[in-house]
Image (tube, rainbow, N blue to C red):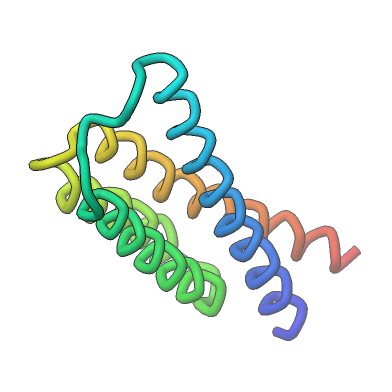
Length: 121
């Protein structure tokens, strides 16, 4: 139990760090290819901060849950919720961040499973 918890927390913490790095990288590449961002003000940044908070909270929940069929469903639900939240005003960001949040969460789940197997021997 302790190994599962530590592996899950470590993998999902790494996923949260990767979310921040890939978010920055996505914005950097977008500004290099297309110029400045289309939206002005703080609304876009605050929306993405909320997306990160939901992502981090969901990953904490994923790290604490036991293995089962709930984890893939929760990852898909996270991606769909981010898509539904950002889609009306920011369609390109919605696609990028829904794939990023759902995909990184699922990769963290898979990494924690492999890490648990590695720790067992």
